Image (tube, rainbow, N blue to C red; front, side):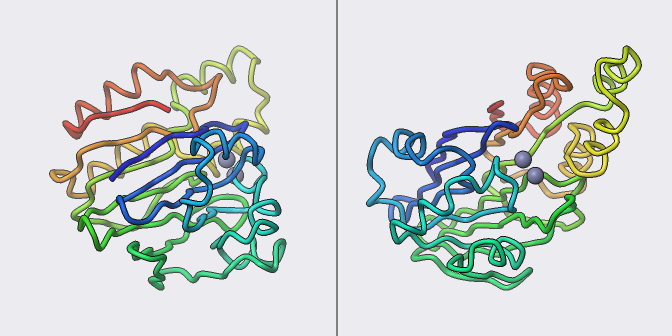
Amino acid sequence: MDIKVIASGSSGNCYKVSDGSTTLLLDAGIPFKEIQKGVEWKMTAVDGCIITHRHGDHSKSIPELLRRGFDVYSNNDVCSLFPLVQKVYPMKKFVVKTFEITPFPCTHDVECYGYLLHSTVTDERLLYFTDTAYVKYQFSNIDYIMAEANYSFDVMAENSKSGQLPWNVSNRVLSTHMSIDNLIRFLQSNIMHKVNEIYLLHLSDANSNAEEFKLRVQKETGAIVYVC
Ligand SMILES: [Zn+2]
Ligand SMILES: [Zn+2]
């Protein structure tokens, strides 16, 4: 599978995934011009766009994608905001060309889905989740993981103590975003021997340590780890 990070972080998230037959966008939280640039102006090759939740850093370009006739898929909450988005349901598989996609609920402050993508062409599986305090489901036979690693408990505690981070902000992050610590726990409780590549997404500028995160995940899984 070919994975391209177009944008990652609290200022915008957009990823391109292709199995050679079908190309999907995962989230569209950047200006449409930047998406066009990210796919090297080949928007006609995009077969659909899957959105995790309504926050602007994931949904910004939904109106423009719909206006241009792209198929956009997401949960009930996003559909209530953008009625032309196609509604998908937790644990109910849907198909976009050669991808079978299973949404699963995440833990955020609005309705948010993660997605398991299975390519029927390459028989590879990709797991994508972001903006979730934890993931309570178990997965197997995963080849690629794209997962939020927003902050580390230690770095955030340090920033709170020094007064750099207001307590209400750190409280929100704790209950709505994935720490590297929780991500490691998730990786430990799932069978990881097939995982080739892990993409760490949506890192907080202030509360993360990219190099340390990469080393910890590498050590835990033996996979190739990219920090996005
Ligand atoms: Zn976000
Ligand atoms: Zn969010």
